[in-house]
Image 1: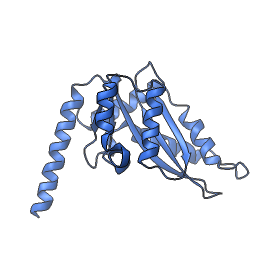
Image 2: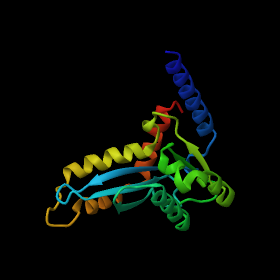
Image 3: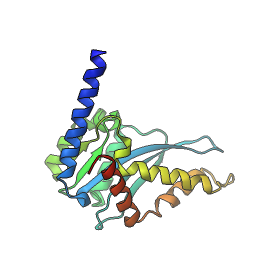
Image 4: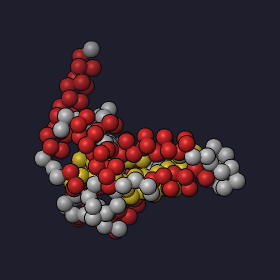
Length: 189
């Protein structure tokens, strides 16, 4: 029981620290990253989607990449490199992510320091068990809902990728601002 209480106190402390930091940041500079798996029901091929979302009107509300296979630390690192090269991530931005191994393991053990030292991009980690605190979660819910209503073409190889790409390309800054408002409200801001 003591171990459980310590974990709960530690989680609460991390949540309060996160809220404190987030409350002092300009929302347009806060950008979130998330990943999901896709599987084509016809070919059974597996895909990953790496999704960056933000409300900074100097860039698109979403930047994403879809690849075949399973995401790992190297692929995530390449997605961050692309976000930097395309100027979707800019100096002064805050990149919010969870503590998964693809974000902190492998070659990404130095990602947090590298982003700060090289680009002045601050990494902020979500507290444990708070997926509802990221607008990316709302994006995924909307993507899932939209994809269910769009029939997949069994004759188009990996049609799930084409449908996902088309759905992701429809999101607007206004929708993203609503997702941000919702997730900020969920963490008490």
